[in-house]
Structure formats: C-alpha cells, structure tokens
Amino acid sequence: MTLAVVVAVAAACAAPPPGDLPPLGPSGFRVMTWNLLGAQADDSVYSEHAGWAARVLQWRPDVLVLQEAQSEDVAAVTSRTGYSIAAYRWWTCDAKGNPEGVAVLVRPGLATTGGGGTDLGTACTDPDVRRVLVWADVVPEGATAALRVYGTHLTAGGGTATGSRRNQIRELRARVAADDPDGSGRWLVTGDLNVNADSVDLGLVLDGTAGETGPGALVDTFAEASPDAAGPACPSRADTPADQALLLADPGLVTRCGYTAGWAKDENPLLCDALSICLAWQVRRDTSVRNRIDYVLRAGDGPVRTVAAAVPGRGDPDWAAPGAEWFRLSDHLPVVTDLVVDPAG
Image 1 (spheres, rainbow, N blue to C red):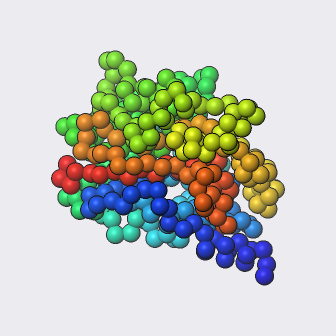
Image 2 (cartoon, helix red, strand yellow):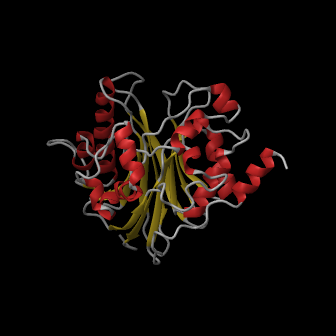
Image 3 (tube, helix red, strand yellow):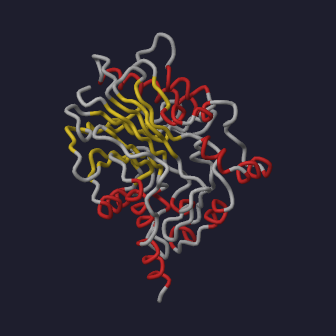
C-alpha cells in the first residue's frame, strides 16, 4: 500500500465525535471559528483538506467561520462536508496570486436570508491597513428570526500594526452598531482578532472607547464558559522552555485557558508546501499553543446565551488522529461555542 493510500484511509477513519460538549435543544446553535493557514495547505502526501473536513464533520457546527482561506481551501471544505458558502471575501492587500480571505459556511439544511462583506480600513500600509469583514444571516433551527454572524481577521503585530488593528476595531464596532439600529443584539462577532486575552486591544473590542459609535458591550463566550480564561491564571505566555514545560505538564490548564495560537509555521515552499515535509509539524507536536487570539463574541444584552465552549487540546484522545492531527492542520486551533438563541429574537 502506498503512503498516499495509507494517509487517505487514515483520514477516512479519523476524528470520532467529541463528548465534551452537551447536546443542544431545538434553538441550539454551534459556531466554530478557525484560522486554517490555507496558504500552507496542499494534497501532496499529507492532505490538510481531508484533515480539515474530518474535523469539521467531527464537530458539526451550524456555522463555520474560516480565516486565511484561499479559494481552493473553501472549495475543498464545502465539497468534502456539504457545507455551503454564505459569504466569502478575499483580502485585497494579499500579494499572493491566490489571496486569502474570510468565509462563512453553513451546514446542510440550515437556512440563510442574506450575507455580504466589506473592508475594514482603506489602505495596504499602516496605520490604516485594509482587512476583511464578512457576515451571514442564518436562521437557527427552530427559530423564526435570523442571527447575523460576522467573521473577520484583524491585523497582527505591534508597532505601527497596532494602529491599523485599532482602526479596524473601531470600524468593526461602528459597522455592527449601524447594522443593528434597534439594538436587538441578534448577532455574533467571530474570528482571528489577533488580540491577546490579556491585552488592552481586547478591551477595545469588547467595550470600545468613550465617545465612539459602538454596539454596547460584547461578551467573550469562551471566558463565560471557562472563567479562568479571562483571569490571571491564563496569561499569554512566551515561547520559553519554562512556559512550555508548564503547559505540557498540565493539559487541563491549557484546556481552561483556551489557547488557540502561538505555534510555528513553515515558510519553505519546496519542503513544506510542495512535499509536505513540514518541520513546523514536529515543533507543534512537541509544544503547546500559548496565546488566545480567536474568539466568538456575543452582544451583552442580546438574545443569545452561552452554553459551552471548547478548544481542542493535547489531552483530547483524538489529538493525533491519523490524517487529522490537530497540529498538522494549522498553526491555530479552532474555537467551538454552543449557544442558545431566542427563537423570535
């Protein structure tokens, strides 16, 4: 049996259903946000496409929000899972021939009433770098009114990039407020915000600043479900041997903190992208992520209630399921949040 066949068979058998999130009732709603690192994906020896699909079908979110997703990545996920595209927009500042984007996908059988996208920012240089905001109006099962799900991917880094990200945050909050003039709060904001959970910038996302247009307070659903995640027990950690030893020694701490990012990624187009020999996989297998920068946020006064939330971790029995090893699929882990939505709003 060839290696390619072995990988294909393993992927088909991967990822048994998780047991750590409770079943939802008729108005339940599961959202999954995931930065795919799509530019590194291929189907050479190891198929990230098959692995992503296995994990999506494992968790079966109602709405799947993807970042760093190139067109073939979105096509691979939809064709392998049956999910449909409710919104997809490329990042116009991406210099690659096949630019990355942000997508909102919806599971089979779930109705949508609309969707769209826009830019946050006006330029491709700091302090006003353009980023993507997309949205879809999805009708939860058993509901009569749609819930708007926004997806975004904000600028990373410090220095001048901080100015770009803060401008994007202001535009994001203003857009959400403009889209909800009655203050119904029937929406979620999701995605890779590139703001650490212990940062000033997360405070700007959640609460804005005095005198600015905004939708009121936002609520970090993972911190609701796991209160330690917003406290001193879960700081963003440096990539040091001491911090890694702490994280590896206590998978429960990593689970409670909900760390989603901080792994290495390969920049070798020959070895990693063409031959699927990615040195970063070895690094990821032997380390833990150490930052929380991916979020599902709800309106503080809206008709949505958090039931549970999870981020996969090394303590999960299927962490290294062949063909869908979490550490091979991206330099991020997804956030999965279960919500209950008022049927009528």
